[in-house]
Length: 124
Image (cartoon, rainbow, N blue to C red; front, side, top):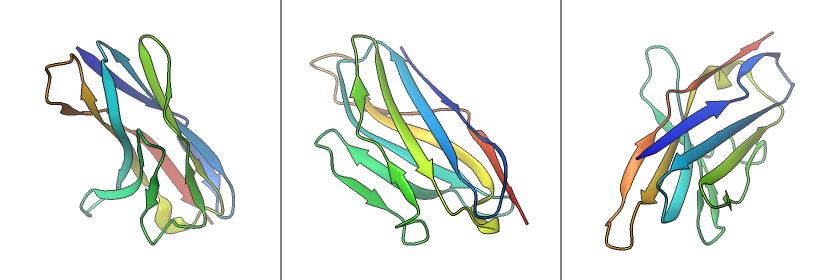
C-alpha cells in the first residue's frame, strides 16, 4: 500500500520561513497530484497548494506569493513534494497535511492518501 509522511514543521516567528516535506512510499504506479492542506483549531481543513504530475501548481489566495510547492519528484518507490513557506504570518499556524492522488497499478483508478500531519506554529 501507500504511506505518506510529512516533516519539517516547527515553531517560527512571524516573517520567518519553513520548508515542509511530504514523502509518499509504497506501491506507486503513478502519482497524479500532491497537495498540501492545513487545519487550524476550530476551522475546517483547507487546501493550501497543489501540484499536478504535469507540473502545474495552484495556490490558495491566502498563500499565493509566499508559499511555493515544488514539482513532484519520483524515484522507484517514492514520490516527494516540498512546500516552501516564506513570510509566515500568525494565521498560517495550523497542522499541515499532505494528500496524494496515487494509482498503485495500471488498472487502478486512483485513490487519495493522507499523511498524519505536521504542526506549524507561527508566533509574534
